[in-house]
Length: 266
Image (cartoon, rainbow, N blue to C red; front, side):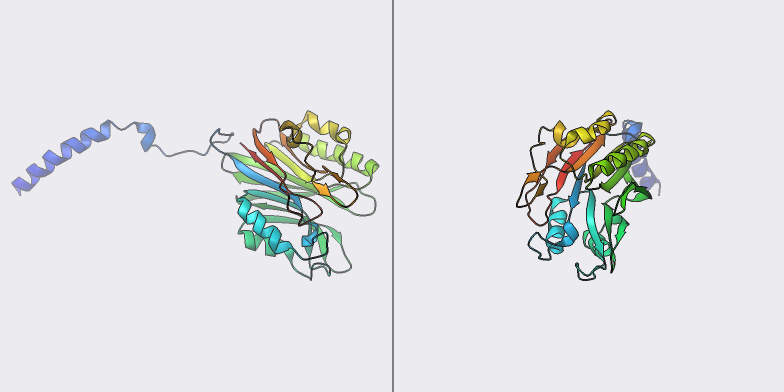
């Protein structure tokens, strides 16, 4: 017994001494930062998926999902997502998409069809802490702005997603309404969507609050909407000025009449 105790003391003293040489910061619990960290980044996609139907009329939702999965994006904002409509074979697209991506989601119907609905969708790898929808000015077809607050690794991030009107005068009112909502936002934010305009003068007022990521990366020539008559950039991702932009891209897929807009932020 005395021999065992002696061995324990001889072995224990060096271990205790070693513990005193370890910095206390390594033993302290880590804390989630509330501000952006230079080592954290997230990937974001905005994509008008045209109900999961190709310009030639073929069902391509699974192809779109394969792309989204391979992109390894953290936040995906979609426009023109159907729920039980005839044209998309009565599929519950929001539930189907979220299940395939294994992510949280918030779906906002914007228009009731003869059968089913169509709308916008925010999908997130990170928990959605809160969600809200705003009805914007509209003429024939209702338009809405989604807001979700997402618990990102670097803190709360507000994600806005929308699909603006085809008529310029209506878009002007919608943009003014969105600006008022953004001005009240307390979190760093991103604003994504199909803005239905390539005229940056229409979006000028947004620049006082946010950064046009395509223009900031000098890639505004990359078209996001392509048909037989013309191609243009009408899909955007704006970020608040306290968010650091790392990359911007518009992959060529030809699965929808739009192409996805991809960014990475810190």
